[in-house]
Image 1 (tube, rainbow, N blue to C red):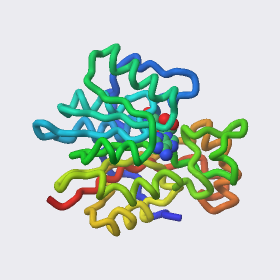
Image 2 (image 1 turned 90 degrees about the horizontal axis):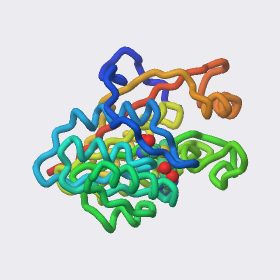
Image 3 (image 1 turned 30 degrees about the vertical axis):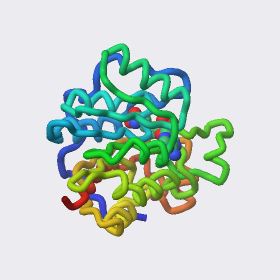
Length: 239
Ligand SMILES: C[S@@+](CC[C@H](N)C(=O)[O-])C[C@H]1O[C@@H](n2cnc3c(N)ncnc32)[C@H](O)[C@@H]1O
């Protein structure tokens, strides 16, 4: 487990909400939370060159795709495996008249639409017991990501270089509990220049609180720990 995190660096979640107001969230769709806001604040501060093509992988409600359009992206593709998420992202884009292409699928659908100048992603990353991915009560593909929380992160790291144009970059957010140094080393192993660019220590929300016994038993957090550190990693493909 990665415990190298420090807590006083910036930027962290800003005072001003980087997300558009009144995002429609259908039942079963991830409601934008602190992780969404942290990566959205980095995205909003990222300068996009004219004609930029952006992918929001694991788009949920389409929140990050909308921030990408607001930040000047010319072409935005939003991808998610959930039919409800795809519907919510489509509704949010249409209600605002934003040119976002929404596709249902995973990395294959994303790669077909690429390559991209920027890939943003807030994937599921909560570690959980065997079966959590198949969706018994209390589990959800919105956040569950296998025993070590890396079921979506690992393939994303492996595909990142292929998804990006030369000179392009990936922004990905996750909790420290599923291994910041693992993500950095996977991305570097794929030839990308990767670093943590934002972090924020937050109290456990309802999902992490429910999962805390599992997290403690498997060494993902200390006994009694009731907080996690969210990190945003930027990984750049050489030009
Ligand atoms: C934590 S939510 C993030 C939603 C949104 N990006 C946000 O930040 O508010 C993760 C999303 O990933 C989707 N998802 C799960 N596994 C996926 C996969 N293999 N490929 C694409 N999307 C996936 C889920 O349906 C869910 O909408």
